[in-house]
Length: 199
Image (cartoon, rainbow, N blue to C red; front, top):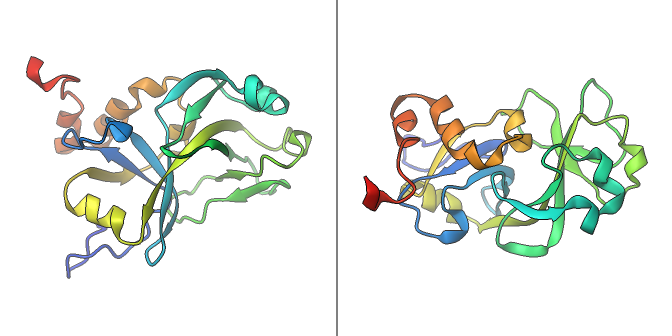
C-alpha cells in the first residue's frame, strides 16, 4: 500500500505501521529507532513508541503489580522523548474477548489483536486475557503534518508491522530485522554500519 498519493501528499493512516529511522536521520532520540505508530490523526498529529530501546529498569521497580505479565526482557522501554515520566503499555489479546482495561489499536494494518493497556486498571483483570505485555516510558509525538513532512524529507521508512515486533525478545536487533524483512533496497540498508566512517 502506497502512502504517498498522486498529489504527493500522505493519504492513508499510519496507525499500526512502523517507522524505521533512515541512516540520515540525525536526531539522537531516533537514531536507528523502530517506532510503532499507535495513533495517527492527520489533522491533529501522531503518537508512537520506540520499540527497540530497552532500559535497565525492571518493571517491578516502577509498576510492581504488572511484573508477572511482562514478556522478556522484563524491563521498561524508553518509548520516546515526550513525557518520559509517563508510562504507556501495549498488549496482545488472543481470541475474541476484549478484557477490561485493554483498547485495540484503531488500525486496519493489524489483523492481530494488539492494543493499549490502562495501567490504572487492576492487573488481575487482564492476567488471563493477554498473551504479551510491554511497558514504555514516554512516547514519540508529532504535530499535524510534521511526521508526514519528515517522511517526505527521507527521515523515515514506512513499513508494515508484525505484531511480534512490539514484543521482540531481542529488541536491540529490531532495526536490522525489520529492514531485512522488508526486502529489496531496504534489506541492503540493514547492513549500513553503526559508524559510517568505518565503511
